[in-house]
Length: 228
Image (cartoon, rainbow, N blue to C red; front, side):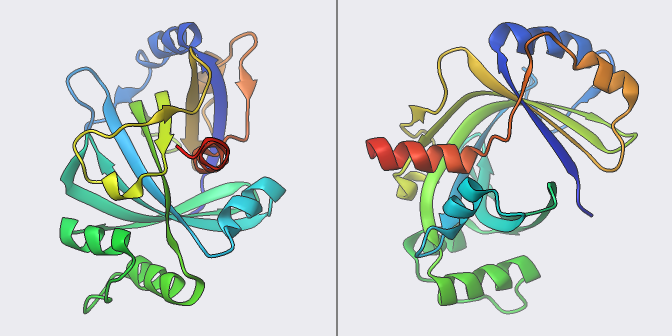
């Protein structure tokens, strides 16, 4: 299933106002901590020609990217994910992998395990044939909410930052550089077919900017410019 995704650039004041509205309609994600947040860290991959980067820059209609993801700096739970975009809608395949396999993938040499999940098998082929390698790490604080009707997921992403030191992926703490100006954050709204009107109406604020923001593209552009 392909899902719709809306992204808005927000100030901290706007995010706080939207949070107050949304928390009366949607439930906090069960995986969030006591403060309603968790830290997301993703290591993004690209091939020898940086195809993912340039396809994003050119607005190619059908594209995919691979990433490793963990939460709160804890290597006990790591996922390999493949995110695909077709006609502006997104689909994600994922499988859980061990910290040992993650380490080998980051080093650029690993063998495909027996009975590997399909997404891992496809990733292995991409690494072997197109030279996919880790390029950049993106990290941010996420406050997530969910709503059952329409399979709606609303996330408030703060303090988005990045580093090109991909070998630090499984460290508890990493050093990163901010990707956005101070006091700018990201609101993401994901849903299946329809976004309920009463949720959409709660997300309306003056000067709220709808953007086609790719954290990976922004991070790569910054790391190319400043070698962070």
